[in-house]
Length: 504
Ligand code: BES
Ligand code: ZN
Ligand code: ZN
Image (cartoon, rainbow, N blue to C red):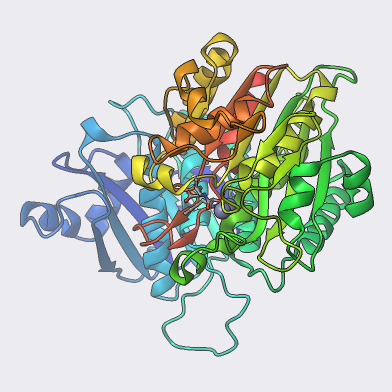
């Protein structure tokens, strides 16, 4: 990750290869430093605006060569779009666009003038954080398996220098920028792990990564292997994992927080390192991306890393339910009845609806903490992609006890740009998963697939306030966005960490 520094905006403070200046649509130049720079450029920027060669449309980019004497090689103008539509994620996204543009041109050292966001409801502190996050998230590339230097590959940003508007406390902005850097790094590390394929990241390997991160950042970790999973009678996790040579695992993470015996927040993640569907085999094209079925567990892990690195005062437990869903002579079968840790029985009608089955045991395990809130995060249903697409996380919970958590997640979603959207989880939806021979079955009919999956989880979360997040859509992009490459997004890490920060 790059180094980040900050100073007051002045001509002398500009450094590096590229200076990024951002402009709203139809607003002209108001920033005093930008005016000064434009004078040095003999009114070039004003001319571009006047001729409508640069309009400030959102994500619009324009390179300007710079005469010597300004201490940089190029200026990059980027459009922020209309001021009316501006929100904090616009800043994050536009910073991402700039980062990709800059690294494509193989520049490495960047200065960004934080534009005044006056006339919008975004504070300079929030802006500093968002710009750092957007730069780091936007420049992300997964390079682990690239062995050949090719000319089209982008460089990495080495340093980011922020120029702060007059009258802002530099030390406050610095704290926010630093937090942004940590959060973005956690998100990018999550993306690396999710991107790493299933031949490398087996259930066991994922537990080792959890161990390494826990040791590095000083939080507790405990790994349960197959005999321990059997001893705990986690029949759900056990049966999903049975078809694979790589046995299932269960990981417990703990960030102590400040108060020893405080009721914790528990985060529960679905960690299917590969989802073939099992005997209810997926068509091969649907399997291509299923290494990302571990995204919930990985988001859980990196939320704990972030909590530890940011020294969040709230106590947090992370639970990762990890298995590989494969068909074999040992695999669980459609029609099997599975006894879960809670004692409840599940009639498995589709072995591809495995996420809810592994989560059932993890959610029961959460009871022992008397948690103040449990949030599970999972790439749970294809139906969620159909319902909400790639821009929203599906959120569900019982009306009775989840309203406070849902409201807090909505707020954290608006701030982080990882927005949640609620689907109803009324009692009526529980009817779809009644089983004639067991307590419940693991699939409903085709209707409301995302909600009936949540209803299934609802059977295992009766003892505490609980919210379910379905990241099947937001967790993986089929097409890249201007600021986010296609593939895993690492969604959830910043959302959950922000939720924890807001509690503290
Ligand atoms: N991991 C998938 C969900 C998924 C599908 C995520 C596509 C992202 C893209 C999950 O285990 C699954 O296969 N769910 C089934 C449930 C069905 C059998 C009731 C699905 O969504 O098709
Ligand atoms: Zn599945
Ligand atoms: Zn799955």
